[in-house]
Length: 346
Image (cartoon, rainbow, N blue to C red):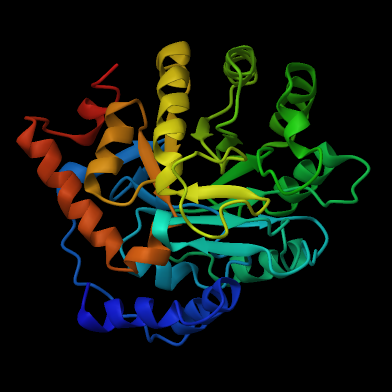
């Protein structure tokens, strides 16, 4: 990353986390974020659920909730970008403060609560960029006060049909009370059956929590196969608090992401990879902060990866650094293409 990018990231840490997030969106919108010169390495080209990707490093949902900076993000070198989560109706989210930097741990705790401008606003933005290059997905959530949360997913999926390259059913945010209950077998089967019946041409992914018991994991895997889900995203943030956490805000409620999530999320990823044995592609998320951690996810069974929290500490130059490092890892280990490394450690 250029010195300017490093200075910008450092400067944002002078502001409270949520304000820093808003300022970073403004900087991207106004073209103030330095764009790296990217020479894509062909070894990184891959595909997921029929989508051709220039590289396997995607942006996880939560950063660009309202689809405001999709194209600037793609220019930074992401292979794909996931915006949202969006809910049918606009939602203010939880009371502030609701996001905390755990700088000593290179981590973040958030309890945002699906704050977003709603379906109509996102539909307008996605419609306005139709025909532009880049793979863009939408993370779908449910309104907090909804009486039929499954219907919320169906509503958004139907309304945005044809405007996104993939959709993610997010039932794993810890910040909407009762949402994770949708991961139980009966509720999940009902949800996925209704969602897949409403599905258009775009693939549908399911995002799960890292805090799963073995029987939950087996049920989710079975449900994903039975309902022909196109990919599983493993995983969302964790409600666990590792004893290793040092930062003052470590006990705040919400989902923990960043470096401390890497081991737990990778362990769950590996378990899904072994259980599914290639039946459903996996997207590895949680604690990715460099090429080595991205490569470890791929070798543990992820076809592609996503990150978000590491950008808080490493800045926008991280994406091109990870891609360069990944290409080197693959070549060093004698792989001729990315797909050959998927699950190499299993």
